[in-house]
Image (cartoon, rainbow, N blue to C red; front, top):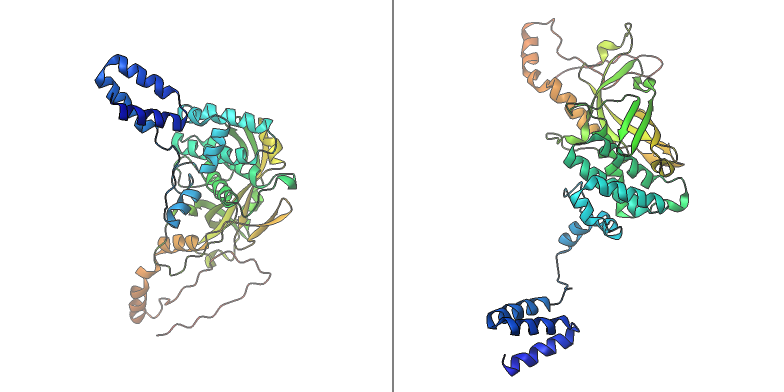
Length: 370
């Protein structure tokens, strides 16, 4: 080796304080010139600074900070940090179910580990999407609920923390997936025992909540899975719960207002799973909860854990679903021209957007004209 190159290499070794480089050089001398050149190339690459900073656009930085399983399909940095802190990052890649069980055990032992609880919610949702196992969707909803609504006020998350809104969205999406029918097109609201990765959840449901006036809510469609075109404004109320659109049917054989409610009218509603003492229940294997249904026309907020909480509602999607099933625009011209020939054919027919719930039904007079 030339004296100048040897001096520079020794200087680099002293600068970075790594005596292993001297051993590599000694091995290279014994193996010959070719091996020495290869080792020198590895040494130069290994001596590069391990930490660097470069400028990036604010949009790119924001995407990196706010990216999650719901927006990018990958766990957020919050959850990855929790895995690293518990030495489970490789375990989750190799066997996510074993890693989730280990993370749950450690979170239970470390009472008040809100970051681990949030990570359990997001990572359970991530695994559920890849494995298509419903128990992990339900577990994600329960973990998110426990993170959002702890029994002790000192453990309540900061609403300005980005994980707070993300936990709400995780709860809404996970609950929707957990309650889906076999074909995935409808949501089923029934009481029963639901399987969890670590036990069972006993769910109570009062079917009287299905009644809306003199009608019954049926055929629940998850509205968070539709894109709407053709409406100028799309109204949505962000909040908590699985947003739904439900049809109505007569609650009994004698329904004088049945003719006023169209068969394809859909009502915006929200399904909610409520748990008492959620963080304490998460530590056990036999959980209990109550499934609730709230019609958007009746209430937009509920009392939850001593706080007024808005419900997630998608009224524009519910309206668009009803209109696409009725397709009134296809009958407009035909009805108008037909009325010129047949004077007994009604020009206009009115339908209510929901069941009437007032004490005294009133008539409506509509005057049609050009």
